[in-house]
Amino acid sequence: MSFNTGATLYDSDASFEESVYDKVSWRLIPFLFLCYVVAYLDRVNVGFAKIQMLNDLKFSETVYGLGAGIFFIGYFLFEVPSNIILHRVGARIWIARIMITWGLISAAMIYVTTPATFYILRFFLGVAEAGFFPGIILYLTYWYPAHRRARMTALFMSAIPVSGVIGGPLSGWIMKALPGVGGLAGWQWMFLIEAIPSIIVGLAVIFYLPDRIRHAKWLTEPEKRVLEAGIERDTIEKTDLPLRQLFTYGKVWLLALIYFCLVMGLYGISFWLPSLIKETGVQDPLRIGLLTVIPYAAAVAGMVLTSRSADRRRERRLHVAIPATIGAIGLVLSALYSHNTLIAMAALTVATAGIITSLPLFWSLPTAFLGGVAAAAGIALINSLGNLAGFVSPYMVGWIKDATQSTNMGMYALAASLLTGAILTMTLSGRLVNR
Image (cartoon, rainbow, N blue to C red):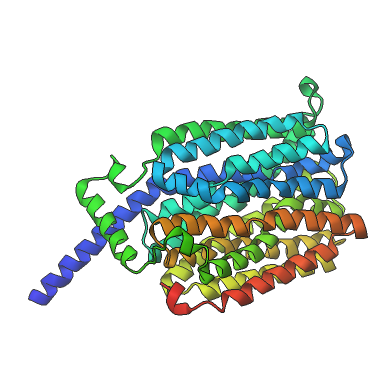
């Protein structure tokens, strides 16, 4: 009889814990998702602007690639200090600051007239956005233990493909419908209109987002204790290193290299997908925008299903390596059939789904063993070093296209990078990251 009572109490406690995490997830994840949708849209809408912008301003593919990529130099330089500031002053104020400033700078892209102004504004857009993504990854560690975080991270990062689903048709429609209105080109209207949500949502962050569990007025005291107990148990198993030691910690540098390899593929897709579709023979900006929905929609499904599998099995490495390998295969096939719209679109869908699916699962690797200030600085360091691929990838593909009049060799190089990332992932200790 006592055994049954214990089981009933355990079931009751487990049920209460699940209801608390459901409550937190419904409160936080949709809002964080919205923040990342508008962030990612402002980061990569230059890929759509390229369709008209290069012709209007007489920019070469190399100028475009350098301008698209220089964003990540500013991002790299300010990433670690930004995340440490967030850890100290709180997510609410700092994320709001980030979103409002990048919205204003993104709107200022309408004033681009020369390569120099293009480079300067893209650089400062990177400075403004530095700390947003690693800040949210860090913020999730304040609320969810490791075994719950892969799915939450995937739901948050599904904003990447969803921003493509929303942004593709929106950008295509703006550039087709508004050229000449008010004396602005279609690409100028696109930058202006798509910057407004970042500023509005940034202001909303100040009133909506609690810094920590203790600050959440919508949680009861028993609910707060359940969440804090989960974080406390998770923290016991983590490493909190001094900042100086963190920069010499081999596993952090290995993770940064893996992330660099994956991000090479991500920004190959993000900055070049509209152009790759155009090369298959589709010319209308609206049709290009609508076709970009297909790869990104497939990526949403891939991210959610794969992250659920990873949390259920408590296995991380294969859930990163296999999607990255699938992404590499898709890029190779897209290059081999680059003049066949149907086959190329199928290959680009496979590539996009594989590449984007690998990313949220990657972030379950460092957050499984880093804690405290080491988590704040380590996540930012990995993200900033990895995102240098955001500079290398578009610049490399642009340079290759100018040199060869084709993006095929660029796609092969990105595929090789993804395969390298998959192999390096499998060298990590399963005991360290599979929790």
